[in-house]
Length: 554
Ligand code: CTP
Ligand code: MG
Image 1 (spheres, rainbow, N blue to C red):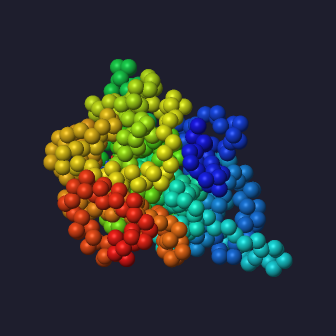
Image 2 (image 1 turned 30 degrees about the horizontal axis):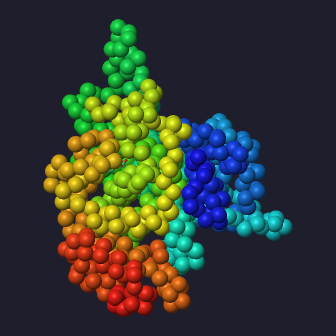
Image 3 (image 1 turned 180 degrees about the horizontal axis):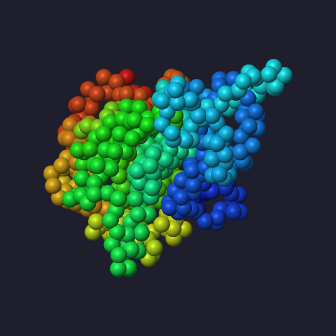
């Protein structure tokens, strides 16, 4: 079952249980209830979108009385859930039980007079809570809980990790600190829903949906929101129409290419957000990219957003990763660990460039997990075999079908602990023949590279695309060198000694930029074959702690 983890220290069992349950939006179940069916990706998405449509954002004064606020709101309807967070002051996210409560609230607020502010007559779901009388003294002030929307700095994380009792628990600790919270997920869906309010002004049937790391279970607090404009409903109507004798002219000019249509749509939406979107700032249209998009900061939620037009294949990748992330608790813990490790060592970067992206890195972890014996996650071809009629998706001539019902996938028999997987990951990619082989998640096999890009990872759906085409040789070499160095550090580990010396140990030691002495060692080892390194590692393992320290040159 999803809720049963392998090799998790008991302290984290409960937390993990709670986190996964909330992420999937399922009630926390007792062990007796673990048979509760896990929700499909589509079910979770629909539920979250529906939730977001019943949600408003309220800017609050710094001395806010929670009870009073809720009391005011209750006259408009039942508040189903709420939380407070800090973002240029205190804000409250309020989820009503009924959508009609929003209209009631909108009707009850005054519109700024047109002579003072030249407002555009559009009622948004952003409010400010102002009280004429400041909080009366006799009201008991209970401290407000502010839900954190970003993760702790790496240096604080390293300190925390040192208190754990094993590398595996360090990895779960990292996951726990970095992963999206229930509140942050709600805020992400709200941001999409608020943008949708604008796109509907132009395209009444459109929706705005998040994709990428906001929904694939690998999102980190602080990461951007990838969203796309979807006309799916319109498409459905169009196929229905074909049955009758009529053809309809859409309220848009016919354009010679889909790309041009995408660019035109994004161009007007970009202008609309720029001119009228409350709190939408730094709107940048990047229409000539391979995948045209509009970038902007959404100040009310505090997110950096990337808006593109419906990209069905990217949605399929999001769902595929969601499935992998739900299958076994080790999957997400390993991905978060590797992503954090890569960021610390400058292997990934938030700016686009020749480095490996988080998406490619995640695919590399998935591939590694497919290669374990027995495998921890199935190949894409195996997931396709489990697909039924409703899972059928053919997009642009590519068969993107795979099973959506998680319960149809047999749990793995692999019980390797996370610390072993971490060391093996570094070992595996430290010795991978990148010159000859490519990474293919559909087959779960290393296959000959079809073209000479330094790093070749097959796009699982558009089989002729390399998702890591941007990576150059020096970046790949850096990745390999860091992986080798990390494998080596884990091998020579002497936890007891490191704790006595008050040095970071285990994962904490891997999250500190490798010093100059380390990098010179790395240079010396560059070009040595994997056999030599393995021999070196084995000989080190046999030595005692003292001589290990000498060999490292500390
Ligand atoms: N994507 C893709 N092919 C690529 C790059 C991206 O199909 N070469 C799709 C993937 O579905 C990916 C999504 O676009 O999840 C968003 O891309 P990106 O923001 O780069 O990756 P995320 O998975 O969102 O990771 P991050 O947390 O770094 O944003
Ligand atoms: Mg992203």
